[in-house]
Length: 368
Figure (cartoon, rainbow, N blue to C red):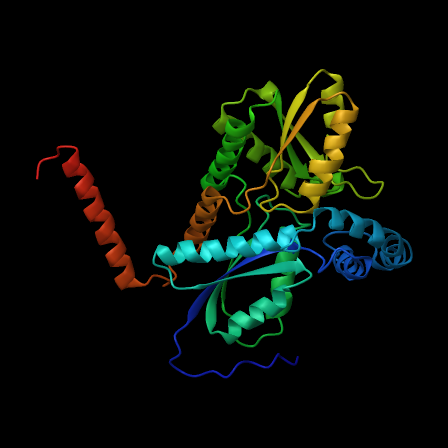
């Protein structure tokens, strides 16, 4: 086995710590030429499509890529912004804000972001962190609910890189955070803020990304974790069982996927007399094609065409302060025991907090 060339190692160099936030990915531009290699990488992943490789290679290269690239490019063009891909922009911003917050809390570390498909690629980001002397790495997928089709694929990319490395860092992997308090609280704050600004609909639809039903039958916990997230969010919002609905979107191919499907669900709600519908996508932490085009455009049209009158899409968590707090809490939980703290800065922060508490107590009439 020939290992990758290692950066020059100097004895006595302080070991650094890094967090890598990994999202799904995006093409570099909303064009067929840019979408095709992105789709090929994505749909060639055996975690995503579990069909015999030779059969799938023929279907993918002879049918899907020639026919779907231009269609997908048109969809991406409908959501592209001045900052480029919404998914990449929001993920980059989340990483920057997370780095700033953790620094304010006294942590000395690097925070980077990577894409499982497209760029910045996982292996390139890990190589850069290695060159920077990071010997402790926490990998945090942007998927709150674990699935073999998503989270496990990130692990594959991470392990594929380190399999070629001689000096592997201490590695920690966040499996899921579907029931983590900071995540649920950020979702709650997002819904309440939307209701405060726009009023409240008759129903709240929680739409999660779909996966083939076969994965559930083979032991994938994704379906259960989605429903747990929905139950926890509904409880935090004080919703009764009849106030919310859970569905699954983004079907691909002819096989049965997790049900109920989102588009038929909103159509049935409209036919049942629901005039105003609020929709949130808790499985996505950053807005992307599946939320901005599929839900906010296509599913909206389905609801209105079936007789609904008012459709409100609640944006993903994106750069919401409550979500950055939640991300920081997840990272701190999984970094326990790592020497990331700047001790002088931490003592200064704790002293300031203690002084502030005493000042508030004195202002309230506590004895001196």
